[in-house]
Image (tube, rainbow over all chains, first blue to last red; front, side):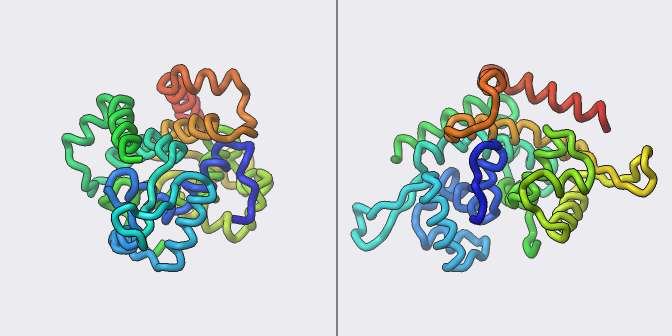
Length: 135
Length: 135
């Protein structure tokens, strides 16, 4: 990234969210239990290995995700959202609420959309504490 | 964009928000009272005219913004957020709340951050109704 993101809050957010691949990776970590390089690669979005490596590095440098050796498979790295990454849950839920309103082909179950509309704060807290527990 | 955004809500959102220039244009329309091509160009983000044209078209095609002849200057176009664009206010406010927490150099006034944290729903309603009134 060839720009200085600090100061303006939207520019600051755009540094990590203003890229569709970063958004997909954050989604996978946050909602899809995908934590490995191969998981992101096979998530069906058609990302290439070099773009994926680049975005994982960018997210790691921005302290949104952490990379560590998988305790179960020494040679494999496991990616997780950091505290700063988990704090993006409310942003992602608001985006989902927006999509529920404007995407007629949304694949979100109606029961989930109902919860999202009724009490997204509580839902955000639930999702966040699950993620914190897995840290 | 060479992908079909529908179905997944984050993919759907990424179609317009997963690009830092689109985010900057939405910010300018939403919070900065910038409504003209020249305004976006001179917003200090260093966007080029061809990228700006491309992103305005993308946002127009996604029905996030509308383009119409400026009633005061027949030769000039005025850009505005549509209903679908205005509905992104809560997403942008959540992003600002996140930036307030993690950007030590944030330029947001403390009083604004306080309001954002205390009652972002009410703030979202205020911002949205001002934008609707200007439609």
